[in-house]
Image (cartoon, rainbow, N blue to C red; front, side, top):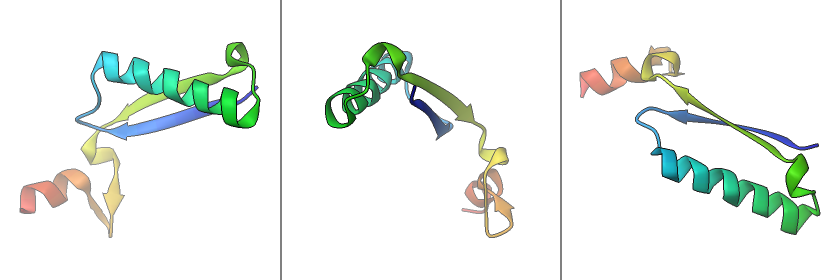
Length: 66
């Protein structure tokens, strides 16, 4: 059973876009890798900018510095 965990930095996709992403990933695994659609699990997590860092600074800090 494939489990796909997608993490998106906020601002994220709309509810409809997330539904389409789930459909697309499921379809890809089904057609390209011969996985049963009913067994594919896709989880989407929204991540706050202050929870992601580059070079020792959070994305929130980077954005506020310009």
